[in-house]
Structures are given as C-alpha cells and as structure tokens.
Image (cartoon, rainbow, N blue to C red; front, side, top):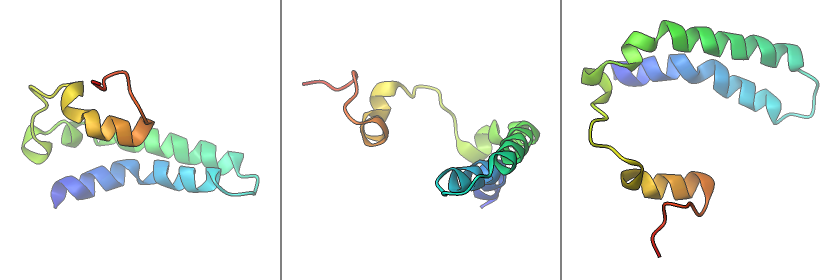
Length: 82
C-alpha cells in the first residue's frame, strides 16, 4: 500500500498535465506548472521509489522479459521474434 501511495503521489501531477494536453483549451501555463510539480515530486520521492523492499529488485530483468508490455505500449517492436 505504501508503494502505491508513493508512486501515485510522484506521478499525479504528470497525469493531470496529460489530461490538460488532451483538452481543446489553451492551458500552457498550467501544463508548465504541473510539469515542474511532477519533476519536484519525482525528485522528492526518489529514495522511496528506489526502495527495493517496496518495489522489488530489477536485477535479472531484461527487455525480453517485458516483450508483452513493450508490444502493448509501442506496437510491434524490434525485440519480437518471428
């Protein structure tokens, strides 16, 4: 639970900025502020986000282990084996 709260508090300003980017109104100043807030939140949360007890270790994880996620996010990737 603590890991989810930490992650959400770090990325919430970025998610809010994306919501404004998808609107039809001029909000460049708000987007700039939210990007700055997201940058600050990620910097402030860096130690918690790097905590291996909360999020596990990335040792041994390779791009081939993430093939399904890469394909879902970016479509066909160069890592796909045919």
